Amino acid sequence: MKAGRLSVLGTEFVESFRMAMGALAAHKLRSALTLLGVLVGVFSIIVVMTAMRVLQKNVEQEMSSLGSQTFVIRKFPAIFFHRPEGMEKIWRRKNISLQQAQRFADKMTQARAIGFDTSFWGGQIETKYKKTAPDVQLLGETPGSFPAKNWTIQEGRILTESDVAGARDVCVLGSKLAETVFPFGSAVGERLKISGINYNVIGVLEAKGGSLGGDQDNFAIIPITTGLTRFGAYWRSLNILVQARDQEIYESCMEEARGVMRVIRKVPPGEEDSFEIASNDSLITQFNSFTFAVRIGVMVVSSIALIAAGIGIMNIMLVSVTERTREIGIRRAVGARKRNIMTQFIMEAIVICEVGGIIGVLCGILGGNATAYFLKLDPVIPFDWVFIGLLICSAVGIVFGTYPAYKAANLDPIESLRYE
Image 1 (cartoon, one colour):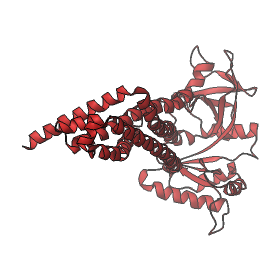
Image 2 (cartoon, rainbow, N blue to C red):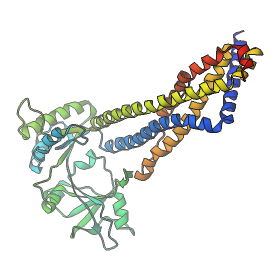
Image 3 (cartoon, one colour):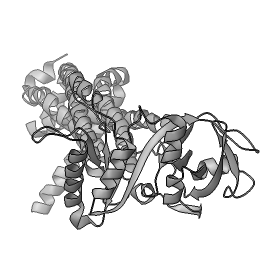
Image 4 (cartoon, rainbow, N blue to C red):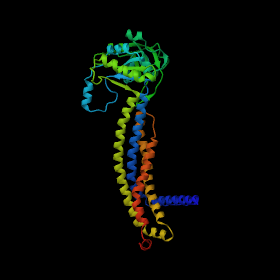
C-alpha cells in the first residue's frame, strides 16, 4: 500500500516537472527575464566564493611551506586587518637586528633549528650564458633557515656557519633560477653576478612550483651577513625562524621564545610585545577570519538580489495563473486535486529558479577561476557553495511560488471553465 502511494507521488512529481519544463519552453523570453534575477544572485555568490577559495588554497599552501613545528618572529604582522592608528604604532617598533637575533639564538633551549631571514631586493642575475629578467628575489639566510623553511637541497650543499661568519660570496639557487641562468648543465661550481659582484654557486634547491603569479623557485640565497654588508643593515629588520624539537613542546617553545625576545628587546612587564609571532595556524586563522567577513557581506548583497528575483517570480507566476485559468478548470474537471495544482505551480517556480541557479553556478565557477588563470594558480570548484547556491534557489522557488500555487489551486472549477 505504501509502495503504491510512493509510486503515485513519484509519477505526479515527474509529470509536474515535465509540465513545468513545457511552460518554461512555451514562454522563452518571459522565462529568461524571470530567471535572470536568480542567475545574477547565484553568480555573485559563486564567483566571489570561487575566487576566494582559489586565493585561500594558495595562501594555505604558501603558509604551510614552513617546516613542521616552525614559527616566525618578526617586526610586522604577516597579515594586518586593524585600524590605521594600530599600524602607525607598529611602524614605530624598533627593527630586529642581527645582534638581537644572535642573542636570541644563544638563549633558546627548546629549538631544533633557528634561522635568520631577510629579503634584499628583486633584481637581475647575470651569468656568462644569459641575463635574467629583473624579478629575481635575493634572500639573506643562515643554515637554520633551510629546515625551518622546508627547503631541501637537490644538488651541492646548503650554507654553513663558516659561510655566514666569514660573509663569503657564495649562493644557493632556486631550481627555476638555476635552470634559467645555467641551461647547459649543473649550476654548482659556476659563478654569477649579483649587483656586479661575483658569487660562487654552492647548491641548488628542489622545486616547489608557482605561487600567486610568481615562482617560488626564482630566487637566490646568500649568507645574511654578506647581504647586510653589501646592502645595508640599519634600516632592515630581520625575521627569526624557530623550529621546535617536536610537536609536544611546540607551544612551550613558542612561550620561551616570547619571553626571551621580550627580555632582549627590553619590553616592560604588562606592555604588549614589540614584535609578532606567527605560525602556520595563526596566519591561516587570520586569513579565514578576514574572508569570513567578506563571505557574510557577499551573502547579504546576494540575498537582496535573490529576494528581488523571488518577487519577480511571484509576479510572473500570478500572471501565469491568470493566463492558464481555463487550463486549471479543465484539470479540476477531469479529477485533478488542489494538491496536484499546487505541486504543478510550485514545481514550475522551482524549475525557473534552478535553471537560473545552474547557469549562475557555471558562470560563477568560470568567473571565479579567472583569478586562478591570471595568477597561474590551480582552479577550484567550491562544491559546498554550489550545493548551498542550488539549495537557496529551491528555497526561493518554494517561498515565492507558494502563494501563486495556492491561488491557482483554490480557483473555482466552474468559474475557471467559463474564463476566456
